[in-house]
Image (cartoon, rainbow, N blue to C red; front, top):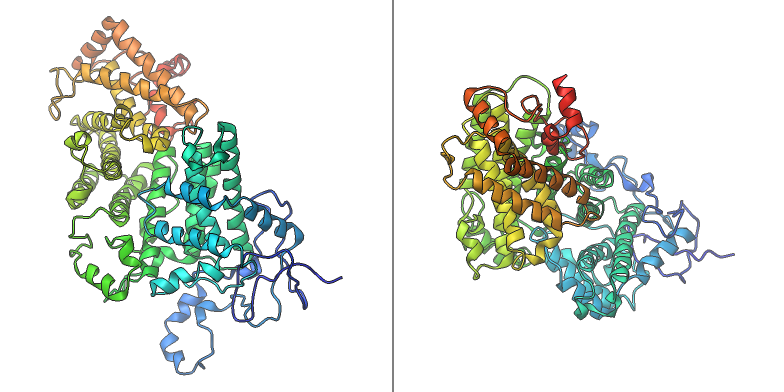
Length: 635
C-alpha cells in the first residue's frame, strides 16, 4: 500500500512546510517524525539527527581549528563545508527526507483547525501589543495576512531553512510568508492570538462571537496555547536547526506559562531553561561586534531577541531568588541599536540614514521611544543586576562595601545616561498627553532601576553600611508600583501584568516598610532623604498595597503569593495601629540600641536563601510574624 504521508523536504534544501493530508510520499524512507499523542504539544519528538550541532565556541574542537582556517582556505575546494558545520546532518542531497507519521500529521491538522476566521484573527491581533515585541509585530502581521491569503492554496510548500543572516528585509520576510509559510510563521501568529484572547471576554464583543462566555474564552486560550507548543515541537522535529522565530516562540511561551501558572512555578522555570539552552545553541550570546558594524535586519533582530531573553532571565531570578541561568561574563552580544522597527524593514539607504543619526552610544537623536529603546534600557540595567546576583546569591570571596558602592555609582551613571524619552517623572502620571504605552515603559524602566538600588542597599546593610537609603528606596518602589493600582482607569490595558508587578516590586519593598512600623528608625518624624517618608505615609502606602493585593484573585497566577503577603501586611498594620504601646516600646528600644519588638524581630534573616512557608524567597523577610518561627528563633 502506498504511503499517504507528505514529505517535509526537497532536494534543494531543508524544508518545513504545512503538510497536505492527501499528498503521496514516493521513494524510500530515511526515518520519520513521530507524534505519540496528537492532542499534546509535547507529542512531536525532535529527531536528534536532524537538529545539527549548533553553535560551537572557542573551547570546542571547531574553535581550536579555527586558528588555522586561513591557512587551510587555499587548500579547500569551493564545495568544502566550513569546519563549524562538520557533523551537521544535511538532507539536501537525499531523495527523500523524514516524513510525518500519522500521529504527527494529525497534530499538524489539529493546529490548522484552530486557525480563527480572518475577521476574528485580525481583531485579535490588533487588540494586543507589547513594548518588548518590536520587529516581530510588523513582521508577524505580514505573516498573518499571508496565512489567510496562502492557506487555501498552499498545503505542501516545502521551504528551505531560514537564513538569519539575510540582509535584505524583503527577502528576510519572504522566507516566512506566502509559499514559504512555515510552522514557525504560524506559531508566531498563535502567540499573539493567545495573548489577545487571554484578556478578552464577553465585555469585548467586537472580537467575534467565539467569545460569548468566559468558559468559551478559556477554551480558546487553551487551544491557542496548545498550538504554540505544537508548532515549536513540529519545528524542532522537521530539522530546521533552530532560528530566530523558534527562539521568539520559545521565550514567549515562557511568558505565557508565567501568566498561566505563575512566575515562581516549575513549569515556567523549565520553559525558561529551554529558551536559554536554545539561545546558546544558536550562538546568539556570542554575536561579536565587528568594525565597522553595518546593521542589517538579521543582525539587529538577533541582538534584540538575545537582549530580551537576557533581561527576562534577570526578572525571573529577581522574582524567585534563584540563580540566573545566563551570565554577562559569557554574553558578548552588544545591545541592539536604538532604531525604529520600520527602519529595519526599510531599504538599505533609509536604514543607513537613520543609523547615521544615532549618537555615539547608539541612542536615537530623533526623540523617539521605540521597542529598541525599551530593550536597550532594560538590558543595561540587567547587566548591573547580574553582577549584584553574583554577590547576593553566589559563593566566593567576601565582597567589600567599597565594591558595592562602586556598583551603586555605576548603576546611577547607567540610569543618568538614558535618553529623556525613557525617563519617568512624577508629573507624567497626570499628563494625559503622554501615551499610555510610553507611560508604561517609563514606569517599568524606573521600577527596574529602583529594584537594582533595592538590592544594592540590602547588600550594603548586610555589610554594616546603613544610611537609611534602603527604607527610602523601598518606599519609592512601593509608591511607584501603587500607581498602577491608583490609576487603573488609565493603565487598565496593562492589568494582565498587575499580579507580577505587585509581587516583583511592591512586596519586597513592603517588607521593609513593615519592619519600619514594628521597629521604627524615623525618630525625627521625617526621613532625611525624603521628606514625604513618614510613619503616617508608610501606613497609607501599606493600606493601599493591601487593597492592591486583595484585588488579585486567589486563582490568578501568583495569587497565592499575593494572598499570603496581604495577610502579613494586615497583621503588621493591626499591630502598629491597635497596639501603640508596643510600637512605642519598639521605637524606644531602637533608639537605645536595645532589642525591639515583637519577639524574634532582631533574629530574622533577610537573606535570599531562607525557605519557610513562602515560595517567593524575598517574602521570607516576613517570617518574624509567625509565632512558631519566632519561638524557634528565641529558643
